[in-house]
Length: 365
Ligand SMILES: [Zn+2]
Image (cartoon, rainbow, N blue to C red; front, side, top):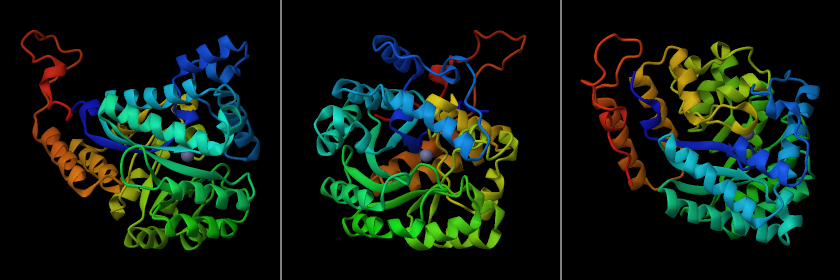
């Protein structure tokens, strides 16, 4: 049972506001005299039913947090803290997802809003060593024409370096709108060199996933976990080289599965899916990146399988091939290094054990 926080990995499904530290949210709320919903303060992760009312509760809590993000300083802080937290959890690369529309009114427009995020991502990369790239995500709750505007903006900042836009997404309630109406926005993004990363296959099942796959041509699927309900579809997704950003804690919080034991991670793995475990919105689900790997461990994954999940996240990232090779080698080192952490509850002397921080390979710079 090696330390999962030192397992090198990539974090590919994390929303900008949803990444916020709870302490930061509480500080912002108190300085603006905003009352936070009890779901943030009761110490428990959000739990809602997987219906429209449940989504509404989730969205209302999310919107409360988002409404507190009103300055460039706060936007920069969120990106940096997300990178610092990822760094502490062994993440080598964070692809953070943002819809700049919501922050535009406070910083002079949608273009400055995106530029602030990109600059903060670049700075966070330098400060933490975690590569931070950006996915611009349109919302299903807005008109598809807005998504085209957003896609054109995203394309202007497309690139393959940290601090650049690497992908285009589609988020919010999967049940809203007609998937095909976002086809044009995704075509603009794809022509501009961006990878396609729509949400799909969490709240809705295989039929909807087929639509998302055929209309939006995903490189990766945000969630995609319900492909596990249809082996033929799952095999087709895998054959098409589409990776799945699986977020077990999110699935449970949003009522898709009753408990982590019901998340069909092992089904997806046994078919050979390339999986990037991710936290989605740790602010609401109170479960960060390493916690997703811990859930995989409770589902019976041994260290070799956990290493393979980490490799999947690295391969599914949009980092450069040479960087991916270096991180994959670090995963091999993690797995090859015997676990020498002191056993909890053992009566033996702990002094004989190598301290935890020195027992495992060092994190790469
Ligand atoms: Zn998401």
